[in-house]
Length: 186
Image 1 (tube, rainbow, N blue to C red):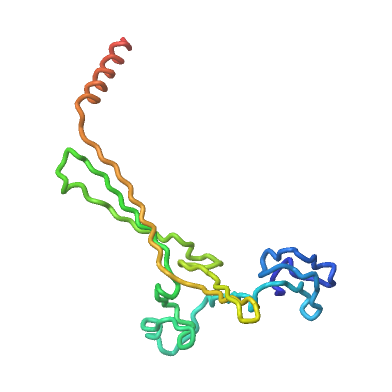
Image 2: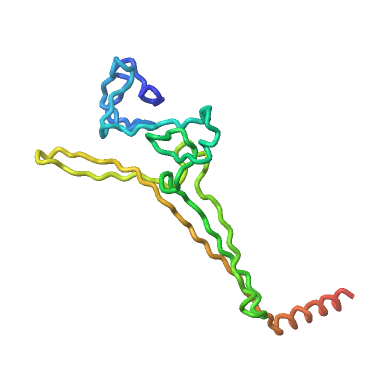
């Protein structure tokens, strides 16, 4: 692609065979494609397409549209309301237990907090999604693959706790140490 920085060429000498195209999708074959001015690569076809999301909402005559629409690739491609099942989500749940064991057990209750773990403005991909490939061969031995991009919900649950109970022995030791330090100071 013309957008790939280390994929430009003017002749075959600019395309070293076997070099990996860092921001591209494969390995250079050593041939320069004069029609596009880019190095030919050896890779799976078709290459993955990166689509830039639209940054602004188009003007609409029906102002209630944005309140009731739901994104659909064909019917509503510009609607900014997505289902979690379409884009995925990565959520951190922190459960904190801070308990005073001298009090009744009903006073020992968890505190919950939630945070988004993915980067919402990431240029790569927001939400929780990943790719995997299935490889298979036909009767002639030619290898094919199907590339799947899947979405899901990921909950990272972190539990933290601290509990304590009054003990007379550490209290007496601390009081005696304090009195001894005050006596040594005089």
